[in-house]
Image (cartoon, rainbow, N blue to C red; front, side, top):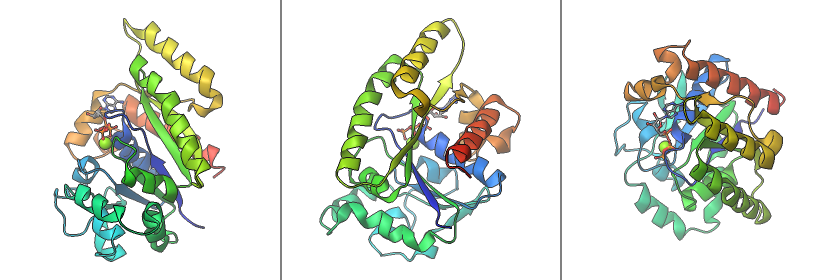
Length: 254
Ligand SMILES: Nc1ncnc2c1ncn2[C@@H]1O[C@H](COP(=O)(O)OP(=O)(O)OP(=O)(O)O)[C@@H](O)[C@H]1O
Ligand SMILES: [Mg+2]
């Protein structure tokens, strides 16, 4: 069966794209699936969790421009494979700008991995530039992580409208779900709850049933360059990521 390609997209920064890519990927491997992660962000946050340097010889930019062969790009860790990013990605993005069918380059290059993996998860940069556009045209589904805050909520309607425009212009991508992260019940809990109910009202079953609770283990694990499961697979975030991954598989009827 062809790999399911899921892009983790939100044009806002710091909303949990990288944490969710890493931890959903790790949860999928724990369920026995073969997973490839792709780092499309020149910040290289996901790549650093695989011990990749900021300027690897082979990276997603050189892969897209066919300067690197597919297998030369793969880095292994945590029972997963990764195609790393590079701080040089902006220069590659400029080169890609001048290519024919420039938004289809990533999708076309990923065909060589369709049989080798069950899932390909793409970690996007915090913008809707050409690299994110490539991920949208390459992917079958998108997941949008969102922090439970008013500002984040206000951006969601705009993002959904932009995704609609991609679909209208030919992207064959479906919305898989909105993932609420950094959820916690504290003094401001009632405010967070009202944001969550507002987002549920507008997106209905589009919002995943499970939230990712605020858990310092997510950050600690990333500093340690590993998924949260490898730090403590009984912590809240580990349980939540596992539950959301089960929900993802249900939504995909797998
Ligand atoms: N459930 C959580 N609990 C506590 N901290 C979290 C949680 N999820 C993510 N974080 C932390 O929030 C910060 C931002 O998360 P992350 O890097 O995943 O966001 P991002 O959307 O990829 O950011 P960017 O747009 O810069 O790429 C990180 O320091 C991360 O460790
Ligand atoms: Mg990130």
